[in-house]
Length: 378
Length: 144
Image (cartoon, rainbow over all chains, first blue to last red; front, side):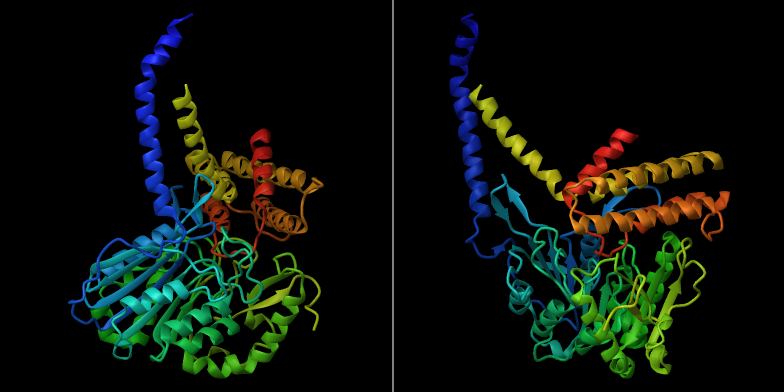
């Protein structure tokens, strides 16, 4: 009966050391989680690096359900794969500066202590110059921390550079937007919020030469119209897009691929390669469209009011959802089927191998909304 | 003993915090992925059809049971209704009902991949709460 007591007595110094070590480790960890610390520097910035003629800003949204499986059944986190791809692009571009913003899910240590939910990587000429973790924006602006990092590290000669903006994530809502971030479901994110961020990224500089919107349903008249203010060409998927996303590989060695055909040629090549890769693996619909923003303006303007009308009707719904409205090819709706519809859009499309739309042979490149059942009320 | 309790408590807090974020959707995707893996593992078309049919049936029954629960919100109800309709479409296509041509034996592997990939599109419209998703998963485990 006394043996356990004796054993306990003998173990006390050891236990004390273990508890002490745990407390010390906890203290260090909690200090690193403390909310009042500003952005954490993990690497120094090198000032003496030569200028780069290409600039890539890549925003990867990772705060949601991003799991997918390959054809062998192996599972991947789409945002982590996208980050991997973006980092490879950064390393394989000896003449570019690359900003990567990885918006991670909010996490807590021991339930109570929030951890930073953004990771930033800055590459120049193929070398990692800085990496920092930061707090994502909790305010209406949504991109202020990213913009602060962009201004701090950017080379400043944006007008002389060929500039690309990449967004990888879920469909960006055109209205509503609650629940986009799984960690912050009450904080909305819409196309309008992205537009506000883009205002900061472009500033006084010229618009981006190319914007790649790797999301579902990015090719709507509203989204292209809104984002078109900030880009000369846009690549987006008007229909659903599988989480394996557009290809990053084509973005490697821009100094070779952009040189030959210019940005427009490169955009087409990027879209073609993404389409070829997706159609090889994916059974659902694949659609990749290249929008020449200047040339699609006439169509965007001509359908603006009718699309806006639809969006207003959707906003009046308690919460637009698939039970009340669904996406469709604008060409299927008479108010949108105008002669200018095909002007300035190049579409790579293959229907889903199964389902109701498997015989649909083409897509206009423009996606609209229609109500399930009765038409949307004015 | 005190040390064990302290360390145990810390470990439990860390471990319990992990699955909370997964949101439950991963388990639904995993369910269909497992079915697709089983479909591809067999050469017998009849077995392939049975695996797919049973996976749809089990999921549909789980969705119906959760939908009948009085604690379901309106959003959950809409999300579940959408999932049910999607599943019904796939069942119809597999069997060749409701205007669909029956999926041929040669296409069953591709069809099983289609079912998985259809759940993995980069849209964000289907919203089902974590509680409802966990309930669906628990019922599926009980039904299988």
